[in-house]
Image (cartoon, rainbow, N blue to C red; front, side, top):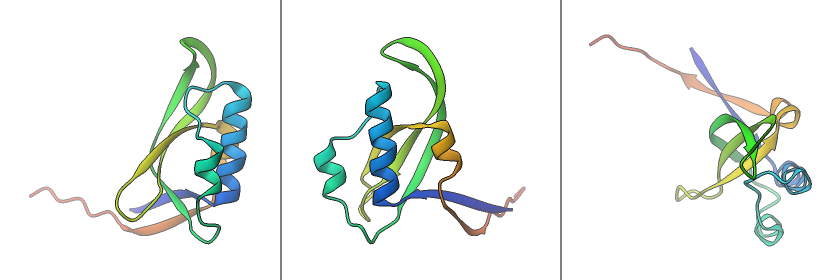
Length: 101
């Protein structure tokens, strides 16, 4: 089974972050942080879950993503609009081998 990893470009990350701020989601990034990222890199989503709250109240479902920002394992959390997450580019990474031993 091949695993697929979604990723952000700096441009997509800036767009997702602007939506998160506009909608008042709990997890958004500082604009200075996004501005300081490289335009040339891809920022993979390490983990994601469906999230349905903002400011302690129920809201439309969106995706909480944890994004790798450097090669040392640093990550940031961002609440990403559902449809934008579904359109993120992705790459396949090898096969997952399951063993019963």
